[in-house]
Amino acid sequence: MTNSSGLAANAPDVEADIQPSQLYNDDLAPVPQSRRKWGILSFAALWISMSACIPTYMLASSLIGGGMNWWQAVLTIFLGNLIVLVPMILNAHAGTKYGIPFPVYCRASFGTLGANIPALMRAFVACGWFGIQAWIGGNAIYKILGVFMPSLVSGSPLPVLGITLAQFFCFLFFWGINMWVIYRGIDTIRFLLNIKAPLLIALGLLLLYWAYRQAGGFGPILSQPSAFDAGQPKAGQFWIFFFPALTGMIGFWATLSLNIPDFSRYAKTQRDQVVGQALGLPMTMALYSFIGVAVTSATTIIYGTTIWDPVDVLTRFKNPAVLVIAMLALCIATLATNIAANVVSPANDFAHLAPRKISFRTGGFITGFIGVLMMPWKLVADPNGYIFVWLIAYSALLGPIGGILIADYFVCRRCKLNLTGLYQADGEYRFTNGFSVVAIVALVVAVLPSLPGFLEEVKVLQPGTVPKSLADLYHYAWFIGFAVAFVVYLAGRKLTSAAQRQTPQG
Image 1 (tube, one colour):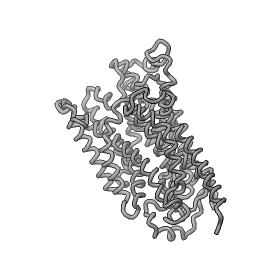
Image 2 (cartoon, one colour):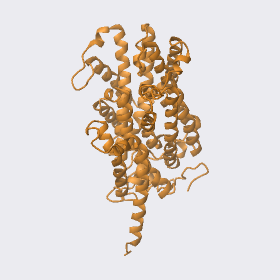
Image 3 (tube, one colour):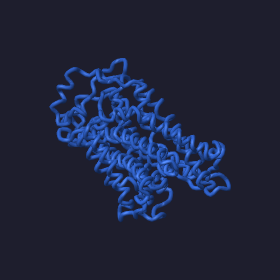
Image 4 (cartoon, helix red, strand yellow):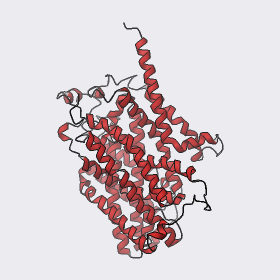
């Protein structure tokens, strides 16, 4: 039963029924309608705040580094975000209707215990993003110190780590600030979140103004040819680069397209989450990425080389005061983004492993420690690794999860869930000892087509080991994974239902 706002009309005794369950804790409990206060502006502001970040800048400028011109890069990013907006809105529906977070939503399709599989897969990706943001903040501190102590930036890279001791300590310092904020609780960064978007937008606009002045106007910047044009170094190779790049753009928000229920559970109505996300995501990503595109293009004119990391661009400024102010603003904004985008959801995911033992704070600490072990500086070391290894690789895992969730919720269940049953260990979502065999098989089958190409990309297999047509499937990982999982899951559910109907009752 739902009301006119598309929200489930929860019975008053639901909370009493589910509270004793081992699958329950306060963080995973359904949000009552009295606490659902997010409107259109709340969701638009959320996406504007999360999209205006340094990784967005780096995402856009990495396409320039790969050979695209400015409009090709911005259009690719806009299209990718327009595509990922669809599963974003669809998966948000259950969160808004039932007030449930992502791990609980997964129980309907993967089982009460099997839900840990997609939750942990999503959580480990978030750990990587947490580490990337911590690296960006730590690297900014390293650059600030280098202005006053030039000898600091002259060290040799450490074995295995591949960065200097000073870089590593600056990374750990900024990482430690993140850990302190997690310990203090999410309320500690409310002020930072409020000023974060204006800080980064202002910093981006200042960089844009500087690029405009130094490059002699936007004419030279925007007239830079595509490397894929006739007579250019990569002539005729545009589509070979475009489709993997588009997959990478979708992969950028593939995490949030799954765990969006963690935020949409606070929505007042379905309309609020749909309109708010549509207004906040694609255009903000395109507009902020244009800043990265324009500035990166300008560096080619100004310095004769493409500089796609904004921190490296800022270090070219001669005025130490300007550099320090810019870097501090970047650190504050990065800290706020990291906690909001990369701690809230994985903390819930890790808490789902043992709801009675792992709290939100403990889940946040787990996120932070794994983020260090993943050595995030290697993930963003170059555009090729950033897009073709990091973004596409995890989209090969998350695309199938999205296909399974949407197939189950919209096709199999027609948007109807048993809210109480989601918190019952022996209820209808137990399946086979807590695991849905159909969902697990669909996930594995959907990941397999992208595996050979991934193994070649990371040099486990030598190029040419597998047929090129099979290896190339990796470049379409999110699309293939989503489609295969969607079809296999529905077929598996149909076969299971047919088998159950043929089983004699007795």
